[in-house]
Image 1 (cartoon, rainbow, N blue to C red):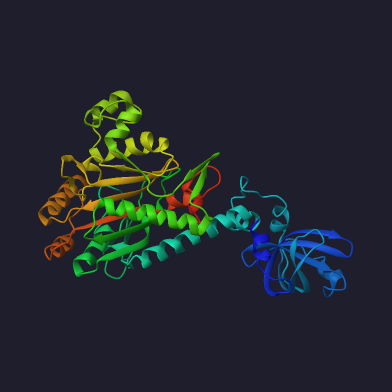
Image 2 (cartoon, rainbow, N blue to C red):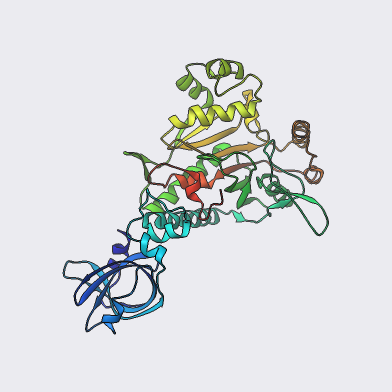
Length: 435
């Protein structure tokens, strides 16, 4: 229990003071035991006549109240680390809603009020603390490895999100139509042109499409790029970073998937797209066409799907649920990542990979195309499909020269999902979801 660990690490007699939320009370005449949320932990207070000032009045404190306490660390006769309280000052009495709920909300039963659930459900509160810790370790790891965190902004004049549907808004000052950013890719690459060598951004990203277990309209992306690297280097960076996060935040390099404990000790498995087709479909990758898939899975695929759509659906709906061990799915069809370099041995494939584990597809890794003519052609092709104008500013910047680089697009909400105890749902990763 986290609260016991918190107090067990403290020497007896250590003084404490601060604000706490009263969660539960057990009264035994001249002594009361309270469970409170204090210093982001659930700890036990020892309230006792003769030690706690105004004990008879204090013990009437309603559940859910915010109190100011002063006391010192002690251990009860039963060996429970506690804070023996000398002063309790009621700052705000608990309202009726809190008094009704604090007896029984658990991790499986939620009220629909996110803040109430955080107060009443310690597993939820601890999970959100874990998310914060994961983000901290990611930043520390990248800083140690020479990456600079840069902020490129959310509003943009041109939507840089391929065929995805954007959120639109309008600037009242000048009447311009603007878009909420889906990806920092082209923005960070501009900075690479300017001379930055290792960059990353953790940004809020937006797509105005469907909502399901793993898709949200607003989500958090970690995008990073490094010069003179390829997708193999990025896979190695990602597996080492994932390992570091787990060891630092949960104390070991493994997570549970149901009853199975899954190790995240490097190296992770590498499995080609062709291998996955043979294993999960019984057909070689070159024979796995959209027409073949439409015949085999008519409810999922149709013959008119473009390569990006059918490949992503194949990966997410058929391959990913079967990939429990941390795995890089490599050498995927070139249409899945238009800005990735073509594979030197097979131009129908790209130097790109997906990172999948516990049945969740979390990241895309690629060696990025730096040939200006090829990139221009790709952007014109995208424009013809979407009807959106080409970002001429980006094309003009490319004329200065784009160095050889590789990158990672890491969906952090999906990574956070791995730390959930029960069913893994993206919405649970949001502190204050609005959808």
